[in-house]
Image 1: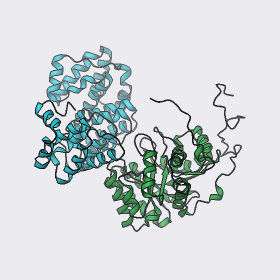
Image 2 (image 1 turned 120 degrees about the vertical axis):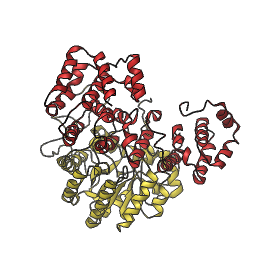
Image 3 (image 1 turned 60 degrees about the vertical axis):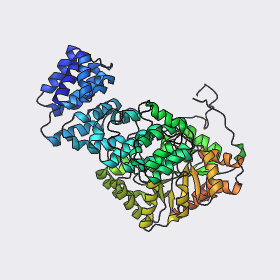
Length: 280
Length: 313
């Protein structure tokens, strides 16, 4: 983490002028950070501007390796705020928590985005679990994106119910499912069953089912789930059929595998090798 | 996408409507006027969240006060009788230290005139905290003899609805006193079979549509079924109830069933509170009355502004 923070600082420095650089450094060296942080955090965009960050090749490589390559899409104020929070020194865990919690409570949208983006970089990671779950209750699009897309924290720390809520809400609010970190690793039976109920709700309403939904069902296919897959396949919606077929390849349930082979188009699409969760 | 269109609900001209779930604090007087013009004579506004979490008790208290005070007055200016349900909503039940405090002030509000139930309560994410405060409020409803307005979760709805009903029955509530809201094709049968009222929210894109609603009434009949708009700060339509009535008429549903689904059943359910008297509906809109010195009008306007004119005076 220290190495990553160093890279981030080098990116930040490349994207701001000397005056804001000094302003930030002064804060980090200040003996009384807790008293200062609210003001500095809030005012920061006025010092750094809000342009998209420029990351050089070496920095990008190092970030990719550490799993943080996505910050190339951030603006400089967001990155600087995340850097600031990750370097915030409190007297103890309690002071850290209460200081940052207060920032969450009064955050406007951009501040909230930065706060949730910073979760993977904060010490004592477990103390933010409730706050993260609370953030998922937000209806504000960019705040939800900051938690759900390109953020390793939720998959690493949320319990199964809170994780399942995140994924459900991502489908409901039409987030980019492919960008959810840890999506495959945290797949679970409860989530698969709830998502299938959701698929049935969508079908009853005459609405389309997101193809990525089936990605979370594959590993759990059993006789009962197989019946629902058959229903889906009968809709003859090509994207949905392909997604279901792809999910079945991840299952051991032989009847489902045999059934897919009775669809020549699907058999071909799978054999072709081009069908994967990124292409759907 | 789309353009504002003139719509035609003349099929149900002269009918009266009751919208048992609409968040008027997030709607403008234009909506009140449109609702009154379309025949809505009364509504229920459930207590809910404000779009982002409240952080203190005073925020809840002031909101409850506004539901029984200013909002009720605002509604009366358009000839629409305003009732409300009071409760701690499922989302904010997750802030336990605050939830405890809210539970303490609920008894100050639930016995007030025009409070027709405990609501809207239930599950959002189905956490332990949500369950705890749902159960406590069910007990409160039992003690107060008030109907319960249950919000069913939008995510994991089928299981969440089942749990909501299981728990209500576990606490000994009469299902006839419990209105299960936001139903769809997947939940309706069990809700009706188990003796509860089934409310449907007609809300574009994300919830029930009224063509689908017509099919539900054709399949299940009108018993214990009601519709609402749940119009709020999102893209929603406060005319959902009259529009649904008009569609039902055009699609061949009997006048009797339409009246049940868009007026009578909601009244039957919530009048169990003892707080609804139809004689109070359709009182002449008195636009000169004031609430604590405030009027909706500002100094000498005509009660209905001419929206077709760019002149505002």
